[in-house]
Length: 217
Image (cartoon, rainbow, N blue to C red):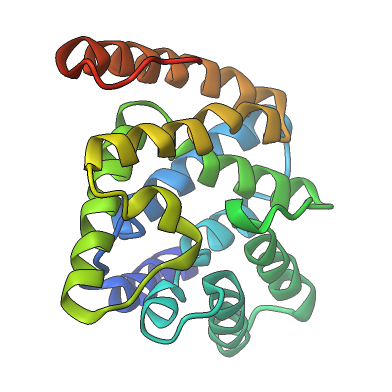
């Protein structure tokens, strides 16, 4: 078994039972997006694949302990890849990408690979799959708070609004439609615009059916 598949199995073992939207399907989509962007923009495909596979491996620890899953993921990735025999330079390139990827951290990546991972992760919040992830994640986080009292603070303003449709609409204003201006590569920006067309149509339909939301997108 090669390193990529070993890494995929390793990450899957960590994310089994992940309760929000950072599961293996998200990981696999981000990996595919990284490679799609890399074909046009360039970059080291090995570093990108490893970073994509490992970028959320610490998310369960964040759910349990708080903190920043990007930091946890980088630490876990460093230990795993070092034990797998990768050189220090490659390990540092991968962990550097992971530390930069998180949307809410607002960090500016310095390497092409880090730019591409950040773009790919953000693109997965757009389009049809972005709508699905937003609704699924909101439901999971609301249930997590109900069952355990854990409050995912940074999402409080949208996730925990009493009317979930209002919360969803506020989330849409807060995140997806500001993503294009935060993307690094031209390739990612083109993908984003196509995906946002789907989201605009969905919000128009939601407004028509509920009468609760006036889009300003």
